[in-house]
Amino acid sequence: MTGMVTPLAVIQGVNGLAQSAGWPGLLKMTRDWFPSGSRGVLLAWWSTHMVVGGFVATNLAAKVAEGGWMRGAWVPSLVLTGLALLFGVMARDGSLTKAFPRGERKGGLVLTPPLLAIAAMYFCVKMTRYAFLFWLPLYMTEALQYTPQQAGYASSVYELIGFVGVLAAGYLSEHAGKGKRFGVSAVMMGVLALLCVAYPYLSGAGWLWNVTMIAAIGAVTFGPDTLMAGAAVQDAVPPESTASAAGFVNGVGSSGQILSPYVVSLLSGWFGWHTLFAVLGAASLVGALALATQWKDR
Image (cartoon, rainbow, N blue to C red; front, side, top):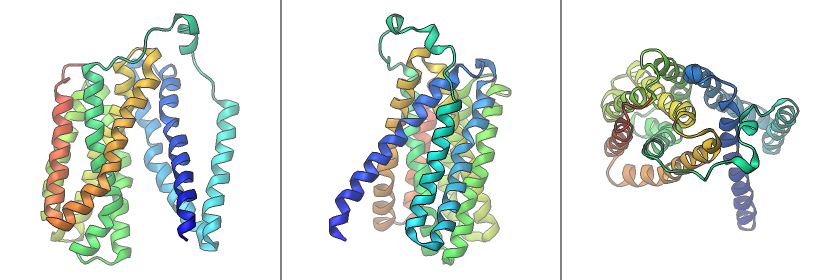
């Protein structure tokens, strides 16, 4: 078993590296597909793949793994290969590459205040998002005395209602916010901060209270997450810098994702779950304040 650790770590690293290249390229490609005036709504629908895809992939892997764990690895891989071939045949760049020929492209990525604000917020939201995504069932089994099955069903609401938050953020940014994506996301992050602090006090009030809080937290987590990592990045930089900007923002966000399990395990173990949720609330508030510095930006 020990001899398998290094090959497994290498494979996982290569897998993560390959996955990290997907979103920046897609964001640059889709910038030409959608007009800026409706980018928030259209990319909101586009970004629902984050929730739906994860939900479908998890259930597919779990189902096929009933016939052996090797099937749980091979079947999703074959599905992904088919989708990759379909993408390679059908997907095409828009006018972006024509607008900036190789010899006429401008300099590299410039770290402007709006882009830095997005990156700071994304660090905070990914740390919070992955804390809930992976550790919420453990909290419910330890602190609320749920069975593993009850905890699993309750925690699934986080992603399912997150779907609604993705669409709400897109529509609000285009209509109620009149294109002010920073303002809409700052408000949602502020609400997330309050809900994180309140969650351990209300989650024990009964199943309905717990599930309602999880649903609300999911909505105000995935909403600003997808809005700022998608349409806001496209708005914040020149066309030729879109992929670089998306890579920068996601790289900073991934550092929050990497830090998340250490934050959860250390704080919950040393100081208790209430302290952990308070720290997640503080991180969300920092993200809200970072976005608020660019409130007037469209």
